[in-house]
Length: 306
Ligand SMILES: Cc1cc2nc3c(=O)[nH]c(=O)nc-3n(C[C@H](O)[C@H](O)[C@H](O)COP(=O)(O)OP(=O)(O)OC[C@H]3O[C@@H](n4cnc5c(N)ncnc54)[C@H](O)[C@@H]3O)c2cc1C
Image 1 (cartoon, rainbow, N blue to C red):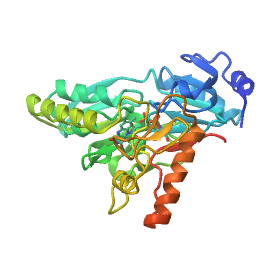
Image 2: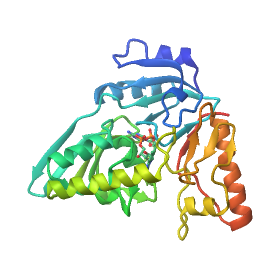
Image 3: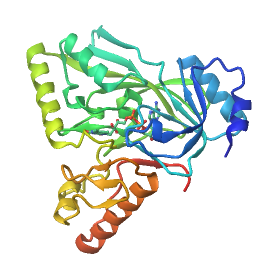
Image 4: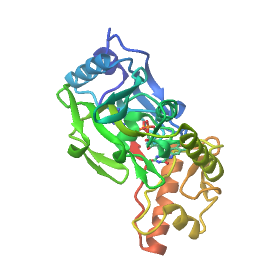
């Protein structure tokens, strides 16, 4: 655990991008909720990341990597440590080898930009990512997916920083992927990934992407701050349908409200706090257990202190 001063001391003179101390995470999470992070570090490069991690570890300061913060709830008590965003690590490149066509992207690159790049390179395989607002690092870590496809279907290689601060490469076969989760060795930070794609027709790829984006616009409450699906689907039941069937659309705690457009989304109608959102999550879970006998597991990552 560490407060602002200890982190400041640890990161003194580090040639980092911007570092904000005691920064309200409500300004940065897609749900617009969350208490203060001891430090929010905007990392510029892989080398800088290595340096920042080394210093934080040396001083035993808690830290974790994040991407676009579109799948995270930071509790109102904040996070006593450093949250690192891979802001400067955004390179995306096309690679052709005997093994086929690939796109490699650094962890901080927006998934949306990778999708756009796949269109210009006439590569098919990443269309399902259209409209997922995360970064490459976050998408790989979460094994993000939609429309029956997941990151694991396109990942060939993941580049990472291991617990000892060494850069490593893991092939898809060495990584354990689950439903919206992965199991990397402890303290892994994703540096980037290589996606195996296929040559396709640009018009067809574009059409599919635009259909997906239109569908999302229609079905998802994009007009309000949100964090995507709050719960994982159950093996035989769609979480949103289950919540809707319990008559919970529109139910609120403070300004946190179950979307009336899509019941698996909690939206921030203005001044919601993380506690409001978490209370609403608990309310849904209790009702689902009581009335349907099921355990709804959050898909969003919850961090920080009450
Ligand atoms: C409108 C909307 C729609 C969405 N639709 C979908 C969808 O269809 N499918 C889907 O799967 N998700 C969806 N999401 C959720 C979210 O966008 C994805 O989970 C996304 O992959 C998270 O990426 P991120 O960069 O925002 O990660 P963050 O929210 O910043 O982090 C998520 C997790 O990944 C970890 N992480 C992030 N970067 C790294 C890194 N470099 N190394 C190690 N760990 C890291 C964090 O520690 C955290 O545990 C949606 C969200 C919104 C707001």
